[in-house]
Length: 399
Image 1: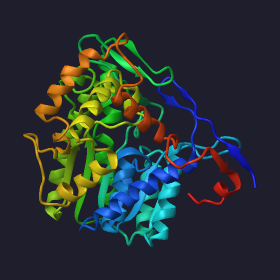
Image 2: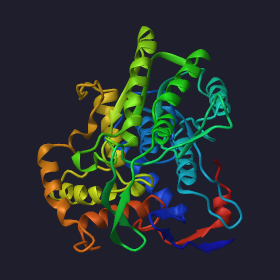
Image 3: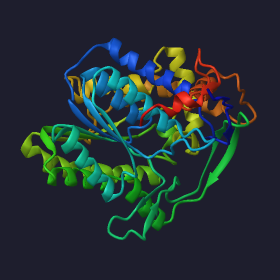
């Protein structure tokens, strides 16, 4: 038996270590919450692109343990090697697979770059081999820093998080040193805007649906959904009006094209504008973390806090497969309506000016919630979980 003690390490807002046992407990808790909510009529064979963490993982758990679906996940994670324990997203998929198979559910993982044509071919082969030849749901939940041009592999697009048109200054949380820091960003160049749209827009989503349809692996009444974000006025300069927002507008154009393509067979292409949550990606978006501190503080006071798993469970049950869809004027699903409710945002806007480097305190409840959730993404700060792991036991787990 080889036992090691894992130590938490955070550099800036980037986690450098993982506790697999904490990851296992967090996956189990999400599964338990969905199971306790009961079964609903939903997907039976689901493909989750980006199913290794955050909204993608929550979607997989909801589809499997809420609707009894067989699930295929594509994630891009670093596996354990030598003294390196791997990434949290790797262990999320390992422990999901273990739990799903114990429950008698088909669960396949593909560890590959979702943007590559070779990955699309591997997924189609897996659907034909293990999923009865077709899927009835595709969730597109990918946040990536770069994408290879499928036509010109030597050309790599790199996304940036920048404003458009004018510089922006804001404050962001530094989790390593537990403080607020000033940050200033210059506006994106036209080339950076274009590259970000190629990476974070709907172009690859369309390629996936085209490839799957051409291979004949889409079931009648097939649904596909892409996760997006709108946000409040407080984050508009860096998000909605910036490069990320521009990419999301492109995804909406993709959704309309896909809807025309799928409608004749009873299919749907939808965009869901989801709420603000703590993720590895959101922790490094300038200004976004400070907004989360204010939002979480207000939501806790009002009893409205909704975390990632509960948010997606509600989206699936009420909207995607339910009868209580909430659309906006652009035809997008809006499960984020609770966050953007006027009474919530009024309190957030009242609190935000008080969150400055001079006034910040690690004792702030909103900050404690944000930091705890960030730590739990990597298996730390999980109640009842120690810091000693058995490497031999971990080695026996299957991806």
